[in-house]
Length: 460
Image 1 (tube, rainbow, N blue to C red):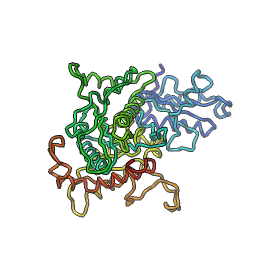
Image 2: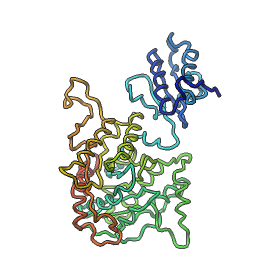
Image 3: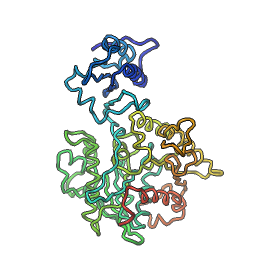
Image 4: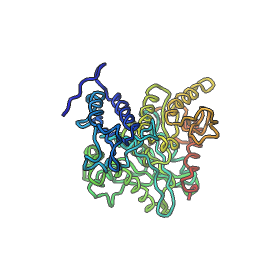
């Protein structure tokens, strides 16, 4: 292994390595090369120059001699053992250069430099896609409810929204994806027994091809107030089977494992689809859910990454107006920006201001909106100087745009919600303080879910 000399000014740290590597990559690109910057799981860089179809131009003939020492010096410990490679010198160059995960440098998306990031966890934050339609063309709308930090009322809001949508005739499925802190399944059960199995069982059993026949959804005991609504639940953990220890922690220790042909992200997607198919099989009408609510784990975690980036049509991002919230979302948005996935994910996001206190003239919500806009500006497009934003194709909502992702949907703070037992308290959704707290949230969230152009047209 080559040990690079320490650059002047002190050691190179992780965050400094990327801009240094890309600066040299763009310098080579300016001389006529297509360059792929590959970062390994500990953050070390290799610049792979594509010379597969034509030789490099004269300014790059002495590529290794000119740029190899500069990379070692600029990157220090974040230079790989071979920080500069030609594609023609690698047996597996095509697998890297043609990888679907290689994205243009978001700072210069029209240039000749791309980035391939390899990580141990969190890689699915950069793999954005939209759920596919069913074979018959129908679409189940999936909404992820997520918070960067816990304790902001996300699961309670999921339960309230689930009943509200069911009352309006929708067939609703709530899936508890908070595996480390399961709970929404019990909140929504309304007295019904949990299913024998849960999402955790599908994740574990599917890793060994043994998921067929799991009983991992059940119908809630909640009776809707009209229409054809049904409320179904897929709990994180089931009730188990008599005489057999459930061993939840043992299952959790294996749930995130990537196995050949069945990595975690794929298995989580399969688990969600299996829950939807089970509802279609067991519901009164034999129909798939109209709406699926994914109660996601908080934090920058692989479950949240898959739920938001791959599984949902809409992501409701919960938060309170404090430094921790905005620092956390800032880090998350920066990851989408650096991976080049910001345009694919930003329009399905919407902020939820939870536990909003009473404040003079709505000062709290205005502050929340202002801070949210500052963070979302990372994801929005810059409108060129001299171009009217209404004449531009750029996605750049104004601060005051009430339909924009940064504009908060409020849930008011009501003291009665503290300590309210949604499991045992009868008729809790009819209490005045509950209705006051969710007065604005429910109609706006319902409109965002049911009016989405990709979903089916209302209750079927």
